[in-house]
Amino acid sequence: MAEYAISNKMGGTQQALASSFKTLLYIFATSGSLKRGKLGEFNIGTNSAPADNFVEYDISRMTADGTATSITPNPVDSADGAAVTTAKANATAEPTVTSNSDLWYDALNQRASYRWVARPGKELIWPATANNGLVIRAKSASYSGTVAASASFSE
Image: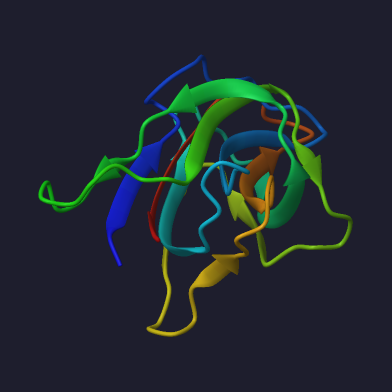
């Protein structure tokens, strides 16, 4: 399996947080290239002036594309070919997220950044089904700045 890196600095404009979730990054299979993928690592953190508030983050399943900037995943090994998984950043219209499909959720102080690395065999997996994938989102009732997110996945 080849591994790829993405971040929400790769395209589009980071969106200010609000009290409803904003999608930072999402990855999914498309009808022309149905391939199962595995999210193995991600990093999140605020990148505006922090205070002592919290930001809620989650990773959930999606079933339909929204409006965001397409980004090209970078192969970690430059000898690998291009990814067939579609990646997008900084949604301006949210993708369709499956209700109660959280695979990971946490609320963190906005002064803290966070890194998650899957144990081998415990990666977050999306199916080889058109428009199915994973979204990395954030929201806050009190912080209206932006959030940085990066991730690596394999396919």
